[in-house]
Image (tube, one colour):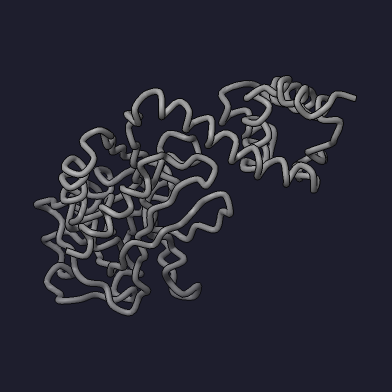
Length: 54
Length: 238
């Protein structure tokens, strides 16, 4: 019961990942505090979006 | 009564930090933890700030606190002021402060390494630090990161949530088990198994199952390594 990303990043010779049906998907989000926005954050979000599109 | 310019001259950045921490953490204890100080110091600093302004900013009750209308307005202005002050420091340092990315589980999946490569090309001036932090907020709560990857429902008004992509769910089962021979599984197939999940950092809770069909046996793990080991050793599924 994990995200597709877990299988993409973590393989283990003793573990097989099997699609799970009938459950809601997962939304992956970037989250940051509105009170402390890093000056390069907007660029970072743009880079992530571009990589995910490709 | 001082005029406005005198009041600004008497402002201390610590006053603003204390107000923001109280507003966002909701208790004196948690605000003190965020600021790395003690609760008495937070109370004293707030009292000095309120004395200076001649206005009550925070309504204290026995168990919690709330902002007064003046406190709310001051909080929003303090957030902007602290961001502007951070901008002064960034300008002086040529924007070289590293960008710290936190995650608790699986980062950005198959996109992770592409993002790191693309960032190095696009912004070689800003190092990107990636930290796995075994905590549901991936270090946001403790202020350890600037931005976090989250897969849970975030309903904190102090946080901006930017949805990036959707992904499906998988079951992780031991390779030798009969479950591993299936092309797909359902929650019913897994309900009588020992379930490995991480209440601190994971993406799944027992709430995924309907209340009547919830697994009765659960093992709580701290991180991805422990989770994989519990499954590979044929102790559990995940």
